[in-house]
Image (cartoon, rainbow, N blue to C red):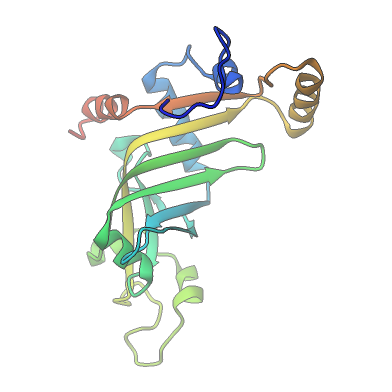
Length: 211
């Protein structure tokens, strides 16, 4: 790291990361577990760089699905109103992040390249009538929230790197382990922390015919 304000000798300055790092899980297993986690997730926080500024902005998004079954479920799809600010953000800077958290404490952070898609065949593939609740019916016979509404598009995220923290216990057992670790002055071993590199994802895509 380029920043440090402590000297710990041979002991790790970040013992939690060291204690929970899943060094015994290979790339394909990490990716398969991440894909399974994303497949059961309904919502994620999409972070973009705001067009015209350097600020990062996040918004909750319903996950519409995976972009391609062949990719193992890494590339997420979101249905959007193309008239919203997020389309301007992606046009200015397509590098985005999606984070997902579940009730058990497992979470994932996926960084990658986003693209706005307006192809009607693709839009209809992921369309849900619930989108009408967000777009409304403008009463002109065109902008009615249906699958043919030209405002509806997609954001497709091509994953490049990811971090996946897999909770190892239920909420009660985790709380007990954290309390015990605090008393003992030891890092709590409650998660399987997996970092998925760009090279690992590229190898996965090559294996699945995506590159």
